[in-house]
Image 1 (tube, rainbow, N blue to C red):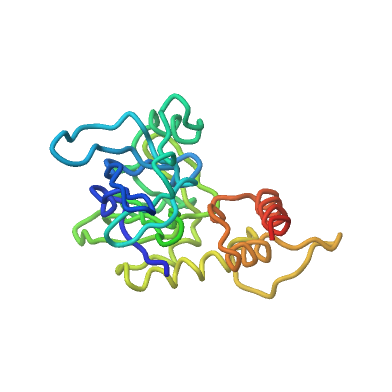
Image 2 (cartoon, rainbow, N blue to C red):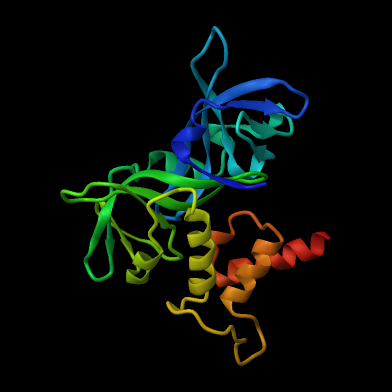
Length: 238
């Protein structure tokens, strides 16, 4: 079962193996703003001798995330920073997305990022941002993570059509995320019937829906070609 949480809510969760060994706790969630995806976690030691662990945990090594713990198969799931893939070591040196302004393509300021919204369960996947709106009526808002995200200085540029999917409550935000993905995964910013390309291949929207049905990890940040490759690999594994 999946649920939506703020990334900061994962900080402090114990990291536990399937056999019950306590191997650490989440220090920080590592989010790559340029790729628009969750890539892993930095860790602290647990217990009396607490302190920062040298190892990191990549998203791919997570078995599941529950309310009380992050589960991994074995302690081998932890990776030394020097051996970790560039997707996580590179993100560790990037600027923090927190505090960045979010602007639409037409120049409307939606607010400033206060957190990343993460879908957790069997896998962890970034699906949106929590914002604090600007102006006198400052309030919390939630926006879906757009398919394409332009980063300019300290601002994130999002499609203007995203405004229609802004919500002010995390409880109902999941439905907005799914609707936004269904309407925009093909790159078209208006709902309508799905169609196949002239050469018979599926549209990106159709590929995304299939990836969602198969629970392909990281699908929200994949290009059409990456979705097709992931689905082909998953098909071959079954």
